[in-house]
Length: 73
Image (cartoon, rainbow, N blue to C red; front, side, top):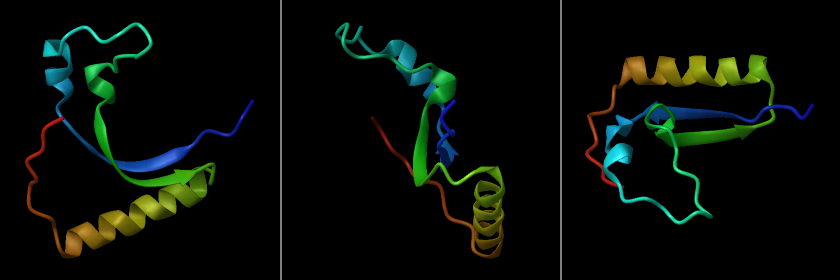
């Protein structure tokens, strides 16, 4: 079994996915719960390294939180 890829991401309300037109058959539509904005792709680093990266991000954001960002697909 291949090692899973890890990433850090900001959650996005994916409800808009349900309102999009039907994509071509060659494109897979993501479930609304899977919509996110990737901040950092960590690859197959393993859970301990991914958790250290998440802790470092949490620490940085606690010290200087970022304002909200408006985005559209």
